[in-house]
Length: 112
Image (cartoon, helix red, strand yellow):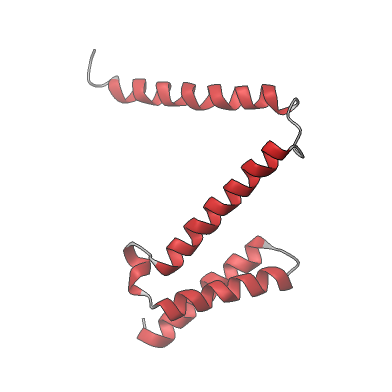
């Protein structure tokens, strides 16, 4: 096989694998009871994984976020949660306020 076609082959195999699972999900979604105990457990595990990843990003960050102090990261996360609830559970406003807080704190502390 020519080396020029290898990336396209990988792309095709990845697309087939992705869309096959999505198609199976669409076919089965009408038969699944979202209120069943198994689906509630799956949702709980998904939320727990997401919460764990968010806490890890705040407490033990990697990359550029590690250069920002823990106090600033926790403060920005607190602002995010507060604005989220004050803005009637608006994710966009909450995340925007948290990002703006982090940028403002970084600017005030470092003059960047």
